[in-house]
Image (cartoon, rainbow, N blue to C red; front, side, top):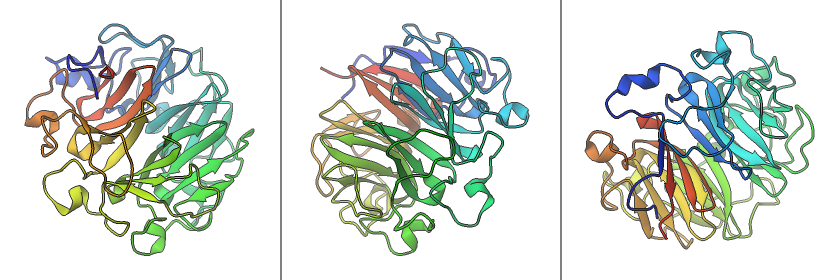
Length: 370
């Protein structure tokens, strides 16, 4: 799945100094959870622990290459939730997923319970977002806008963002649902569709019932793969697949399943201590090269790939572990250039995969195997 000679570039990591990540700078990362390889050639990283977004106008070609653009902090040496100040249209509080949408950029600002959208990728430090979802304006940061129940305009800990054509997809993790905007134009706009719940005002875990083909626990990522719509439901240790693409009906159940043997199962590693080629343990991220689905099997510290869907299909590719039955962080050893420790974010474009290797406080740029 990934080239055997290891990643082309490693960002934010010095093998001889594990404390360096705690010190914000142009070239350090602290628990990054989101990455985006943009079609304009840029790279964007949600440097989650430092509460900031870092940008490289061109994808880095050297290890620890310093970032050029900073969003969320007054300078590269500063950190803190919302830069230790009042929220703004560019401040961040635990940024997670980041993705391209309509040529622009979208960031899940998880603990501000909102999504920030730039119509074109930022060119300047702390460029304000053009659209904010989940809140009525840049000042709002309350979960579900302070209400007990969600609505079509609110968010609670949104983690993942994605685009399908012109549609924007948000994994509204704390509300256990996925929201779809079909024609997004302005701040505070309500979503058009919901998946994982039967309506916009319910947020119960697994829709308030047993695990099923429509319910979710912690949705974290979404994409389309081979014409199917896929959601990484980390809390139920599975990837849900809708065979006809993005659902058109609220609460529509999925048709296929990766990581579990049936729609009622939810145990990690299929109720076993060790993983297998069919099992998952808290999958947080998805990517695709067009043919193969790549899953960040986060708690098993590996990437695992499928060529075909179905019900509990066996994976045919693996990275980060020596075999499908292994699961140790960095192979139960110290971090190596080609090891993984809790990968939280993925992005793939033109034969390159960006991996937010969060447990190692770094991002890997790795070529697909030919």
